[in-house]
Length: 156
Image (tube, rainbow, N blue to C red; front, side, top):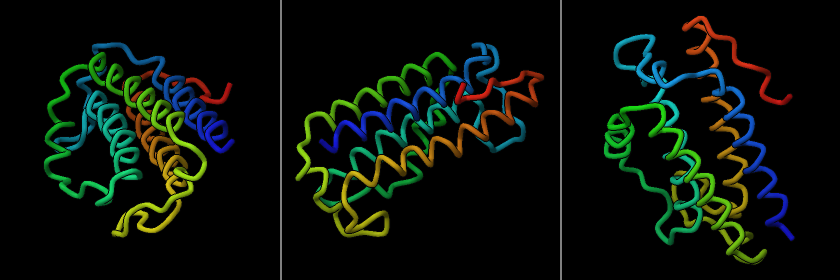
């Protein structure tokens, strides 16, 4: 069953991200290395939003939401690391639920035509979630090091 492998991918993606973030405390959430960049909490919020964005887009008849300014506004409204972490946990749970509710044929159906993954099998978006999350896991590791913290090896 295709869903089993996808659930494993979602689980490992979440675990690796959480492991990197594990040294961050609530007071670190507002850290921003340079004006205009996301704060640490906003980075986590962006990852949460993007997990939801991929899952919604992979099953949408119209494809992915391309209203990036509106999406960024929602991320910029994240005020605390706790809020962002809650959103992220819930987003990963929604991804698992959607995959588990889908049979193999549905997961192999094609994403709606468009500039983002248009025409590829839906299940491929789970790999994109993992890649995007890994990218931000690296950014967060840099933020944490700038704060004088040492994030643990995510795979241990």
